[in-house]
Length: 216
Image 1 (tube, rainbow, N blue to C red):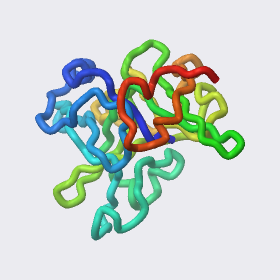
Image 2 (cartoon, rainbow, N blue to C red):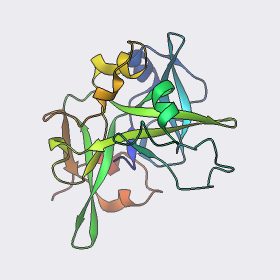
Image 3 (cartoon, rainbow, N blue to C red):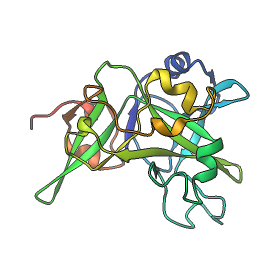
């Protein structure tokens, strides 16, 4: 599952990493507490060209009459993504990548929510698997989630699908069919995590101190 994440790498570095053309509508960076319904940078591939462009984080199904016409959809479960009416067309035709520097997950301990910050062990940006949908004039995105693997360290039962670099062309539809095999948890040793301050529990919190380690 992914409910908050960060992007601290500059847009130019992200665009180079994904070999994408930068859009002029990207939200400012760095961002240390990205919340649902805000604009996020997304990599798409259309006609053989990759673009880094902004989308609303919060997938809006085609039949919604307003953005808040139903539940807020920020994640799409890998086990039902191909069959649910909201997602099945998007996962076939509109897959994308959501770049991130890291993400937060919360551990429930004696009625408290203790936040942890996850990032790649190698320090590189993450590539979340995503699907997108145009609703009216708005492009919207959901992050694909799957059963949690060893890297989640028992904190949550689900995690976002983090794509490895060699898998990007397949997920983006540039390398044929068969992307379903990519919807799996990260292998052991890919992610690392540390406890962070509970200030991040507020969606108004912002700043680099949010990702600094605290003593457990």
